[in-house]
Image 1: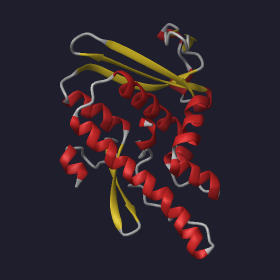
Image 2 (image 1 turned 30 degrees about the vertical axis):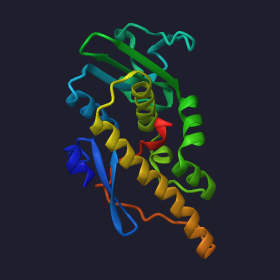
Image 3 (image 1 turned 180 degrees about the vertical axis):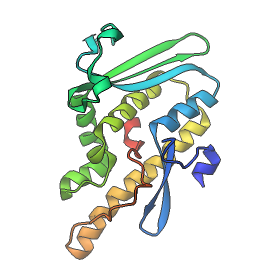
Length: 211
């Protein structure tokens, strides 16, 4: 099992990885906290973080230089109130043990555009008018994950464990989307997902974010 190999706990409360029942098998999916955990374990990262950004937190973002500036944290109010409608983007940052550091920012629109272009499972959701993937049910968490993975792909140090986890995650995402098309072609009926219990985690999918 990939989860055992990665030594990531399958516990929804920790949000590092999930075993998702699909068809007749259980599939591994890594979440952004699991990505962070693998980075820390590699010993290459001194600090790593990602988060959604609220309207009253973002001061400016230069898409050319990548520079992101924030207002004084003492002025933040929307985050404490949990006003998700005021989330304007997603931010990720890391600092390597040797001193190199880098950050990345995506607007919510950029994150969703990325999902539409690269996520086969989300494309399937849109095609069949269903909500079976995290991009449909928890876009903020997926946006956080996307900006983190994009940052790591461009500038991070990728351990073998990280690469193996992402490959396994990608395999599941692609298979799920392909299955939806196969069901429709064979039966003429759209795939219907069975609502899972509260042990299902809100945020399993990574895969396409490394495109």
